[in-house]
Length: 360
Image 1 (cartoon, rainbow, N blue to C red):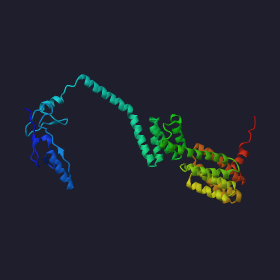
Image 2: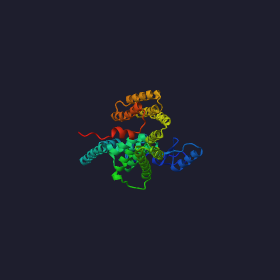
Image 3: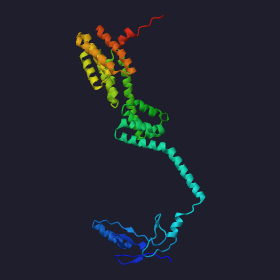
């Protein structure tokens, strides 16, 4: 016969099925009384959580009563007698259901293997985005590049990469990302992320155009001051590109050379070499010293110039492109040291490099 365990409220004395009662602070209450007890506890600033009681003496499947003192064991959250527990645990699932489950497991494995790269792309973009938000743009670039290898069509990843690259002066990486994405088209031209990158790109492009014009002028005699002005404007408008500021410093040296202000030329060259050490900067110091020697005849300038040239040659070892540049530069410096004649690169090229080769 099906029965159920009884409970009695400690407050009002109501007796009924245990399932209609609640446990609060280790005592059994009916619903109205537990509300009152919980309110009183809250008013005192004490915990007021209570839980409903369950009757595990009745089998959830067949309804058999276990008695006043014993409970049925729980199987999957349900109280089941021994017989029902064995039946449920060893339930003979149909063959079609087993086959369907196996097929679903296979499909799950395939989906996980196939989708693994997309999980990786999502993770790398998440890391890259966090780094961009922290203004760690240089660190963000490789993560976002990895994302685009897997998901090249992602507007968000492209814009994040372009922003990180432009913020570090890496225009080439930004250009590759933007122009290689759906032929430069994006879903929304009004998206704030797109507008931010567009503003960055326009500013960087304008700076590069000025820098290119400055570089062209620098190759012509008599335009050093204008070239330096343009390069400084480019550096000021796009400070994210440190190479523009370095170029502006180098162009200042060109202005001093054109004005025959060799003291300023040497001071600028020494400062640049200290801030940006390397074979090119060392050779620039040697060039300025050669100018000082040619102008004054002071042997100490010649000796130091030759020493700086040797230092530059040691610094450039292993760099084929750098060695070729230094050979051309050193040739002009040594001509200045031997002739004490100060001429520009353009004049040197006209005299010694651009002469028509004799015909056979």
